[in-house]
Image (cartoon, rainbow over all chains, first blue to last red; front, top):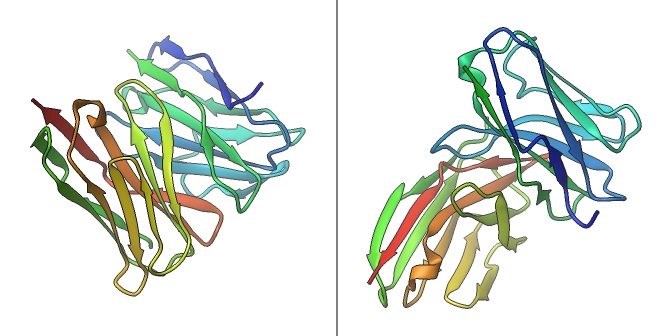
Length: 112
Length: 110
């Protein structure tokens, strides 16, 4: 596709459940980023991939959060034992460094 | 740790007026970005500023960068309702990730 694609666009889950969010970056972009945006806040960095490896995962809040990018393209953000505080919009972005970042539309996660 | 602060956080302005949004950051950086976000939407890139003294303009918006002062400004000229949105600055941290400011929510009224 022409842009960064994220699925699902909306996800409602119950506290304690497991969630996966998917990001399909722009073709050819080697770098992929995950951000989290809470209501009324700026995007908060979570993790950054260069190719298949996580170059910087310093933003992951705790060990319930994990992300993979096994083939250097599509990435999945995985959240275990979800908590209400995990509710946010999860944004994915990609670029061909050091070029501009392009953001997807986001996945809105609501934990009841 | 790189910190990025914007002010004001909220701005209500009348159509036709001018105003400036400020973005301060705490450590040296290679580049600074301005983004626009409409409610429920993702981030739209407005400007990329790459060097000290850089100035870019698009329509009623003009962005500038002073790397010595660690300050960027987004100036709005003769505001119109269509500019109502939230504006974020973001600073490149060691070229591997962007750190975003708190955002400025702009409302333009008739």
